[in-house]
Length: 402
Image (cartoon, rainbow, N blue to C red):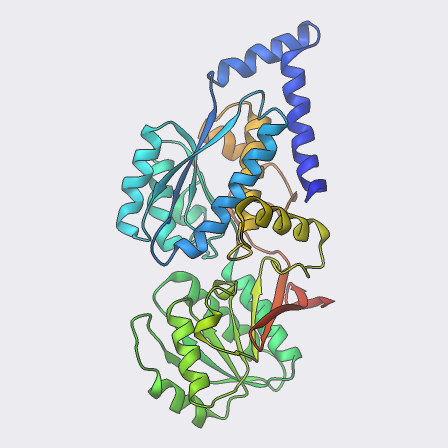
């Protein structure tokens, strides 16, 4: 991470120094920058879930953002201005997103950081973009978190759900599985898109087929019917398109019924906070941004999670924490480039970054594409309650073992 942070902050420091010293040309640039950036800190509004089920997904990115702000401020801030985070709690309630977003705007937010999901994050994003403020979700994976739905000022640092599902489908095929069964959770867009991409990718492989599917709901208390139909299907792998707490309940009942079929899932299952509810879980695989257990193949990622634990006194809940850091990296770089916090100017700067290297991996946008369409997926395995890296996939191909 030090390499990535230094690349960003060296540029910010350089711009800060140029704005504060030098000859007449530099002085003119400094005046221009100051005219566009009022005195005082640059506020990033944090419209996130600090309570409710989505808090498990938002806590890590929020803390990642705090680490990024601390690093950038320690090196002089952005164009001489400190970054400041101000929080509002959406309580995992979509209906509160707009209210929280409006409140943060009234408290001076010049960019908005919203929940890690399209359904929950879009209300606050719309509140921000309606006032010409850029909004970024650190890890929303739905393709709807993009220009056609939310307009030109909303972005996701997350990777499209379909990209991760494609990598998981190819991983399952490479493991030798040929008959997949799907459990579809229709409650959010991410899980619907995940199942659709897995089905199309897996079914297109030679001698592979999707032999059946069932619907599961977060409110379900019994999965006996789905388990019985899975048993009868002849499937050799189950794709679980869901998230916690419902997914954990389904897995617990599946294993309690004596069904040990391999299960593959999505990055909503990242982290081990839920594993106590499924004792000694094995034959379970999912994709994530990274491993938070110290065995990621990237040294800077392992360094980041070590710093996280040292700072907050506990391990990150999920690898989503990386995307919170990366979100602040991109916002800071855009402000440095545009020399303003004007939403349209920041959007132009973000769109022009090209393939920008963040702690979460290569990140690039365009005028009509505001979600990351491709990024390597770390595939993790849970065996006996222990999680470890098994492979890295990108574009539906294995690029690294272990």
